[in-house]
Image 1 (cartoon, protein in one colour):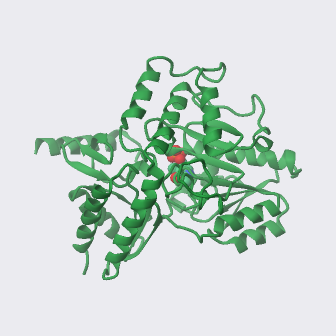
Image 2 (tube, helix red, strand yellow):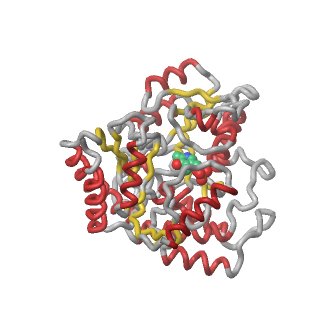
Length: 425
Ligand SMILES: *Cc1c(COP(=O)(O)O)cnc(C)c1O
């Protein structure tokens, strides 16, 4: 009882002194290893969120932690006022790994999205001759690209947006997965510089578009000389069963043993979250020189971006993805997971839908967005040893670390289906 009081005390401390910007599931975690988390009361859980897909490599991966510790003892930060001995190697590594000519290093996802917006606009003015301050970027409804004042300007979530204005202009919203709407805007608007899109909309509830959505968008962007900008902060790094979700069938060297047949290569690729395996904030914008070279010295920057810790950790975290074949594992386990849940919903009244790709999946609960059912299910899952969280009220996302084994996945499927069963009417 004393320990339970301890966990409530810690929650109360957050509530008393912190901004009330989150509404967490009341688990106070103090330790993680692989697919497991432990709370301050010693309870053990399967992690089925992976810090919004930042911990693809599993909690406290020994190789990544070792890289972090060793670098922390030698050099942590120089700023970009000087060179450091890791940055060049990191840049070569990343551009080779993801097959782009240049990288702009940064820290958080939103920061990288902001940089991509700036690069796109400047490309529009200097390469496409868009008149000054007239550049526009097409985005999709229900998008999630981060929390900065510019990014929330083109959010369709009132809670993220209302009373944070005046909002930034220069963004046009089309429905997700709608290439006709995309073409209609491209035909009628000469000042479009880019199309910013998530290959799968994670925060919106794991909306997976039609198979050919991205390749059609790719063709349209090429036809109208508009940059295709893929935000793979959540979908990238093996999560969806290919190194990048925009791969479809991906072309990257040995990451997932696939052919280049339907690879959709964006002009600008935005990465974050799992580049570091969840141990350090690392994000990046990747594109070819013809685009990246619009940025010249003094025109963009970040004090921590490209620091030697970030570089060392990210290289190790991406080696782990490759060495442990986590992309392939995500693809394999994802199929098993969806098959099991599809089987379950055949006779379910509480779950109406299962969708996703690789290990980025969601179930839709048969209730309104305002209902508490999904939250109550997640509370029950916690009681039964599995941590997940609703997104958008009636949708529960399931995204475990990619280091999960088949046996562990089966345990998790058992926990999820037996928990859901107690909610059936
Ligand atoms: C998480 C996320 C972001 C924002 O990343 P932060 O590190 O929280 O700023 C942007 N885009 C997508 C698709 C994300 O999932």
